[in-house]
View 1: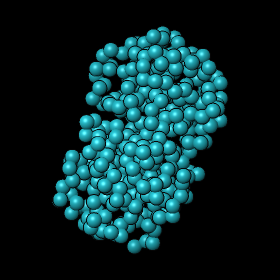
View 2 (view 1 turned 60 degrees about the vertical axis):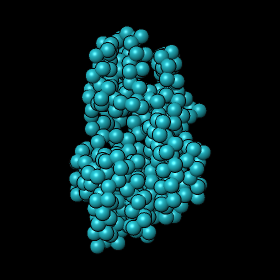
View 3 (view 1 turned 135 degrees about the vertical axis):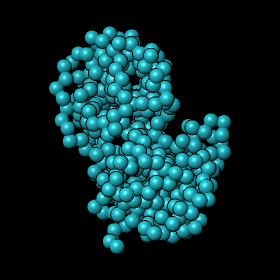
View 4 (view 1 turned 90 degrees about the vertical axis):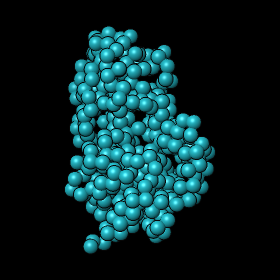
Length: 352
């Protein structure tokens, strides 16, 4: 057996998504320094992409409540592979990872916030979910918040001790593709995300309908349960590309528009920022952390008037916003944060 730290990345679903992309990026970033393992509830995009790791499929992760058999199988897998650190990136996986601490006190368990779904997705039960998260934090060695907004929720709403938390803002690998030489008109907008709550593509599409195809176009990349209804009512300057796994065509667009009711620090916006794209985003979660005083993007409220006004400002000031976006692109690159993640996983506290 090699001497590298043996780290298991556990995540409920393997479908295309922000937390899944975060997990993929972590494995690729640290693969020379650690022995990574992938644990998930299904065979999907992430397992296919990381097939070389021989992912462990634990369907029990997909169940609403943890099952005794699922806990036993996970415990056996950890023992058989001498895993010493578990990094959990979703709610259900986080429950399983923390419960492992009851049977394996020496196991180091790390939970990644990715937006605190116990708050935004809990509905009337959010109080119960928040209490459960607070209790689970007692079985957690470290909580990593992916944005300052998440860190604030962690402290003020979840009351997780600050001694157990750090903030490592989401980043994404440095792009290898160069910006395309796009004509100034029409302005090509991109929406990248799952077509389901909490995303609001229908609001963005309604705002876009007030502009002509000669002024701008919007390409929707993503799929989900709301797709059919959204597509039926879309104007002729909106195009649906469906789900594109490992999307890397940001350089063919003028700007990314992400309208959503809730976000942590969105991976799609990070990737767009890394390419030097201007951003138009809802002022929720950590979205404001991706837009700085240089003017690399705009924030809006989730109203038709505000989104439409944001698009108008984007069109009017596109050149200056693009220049600022290119200047700040490197702030989104993952590689400079490598040592911070290694220190966090191995127990040397780092970050802010």
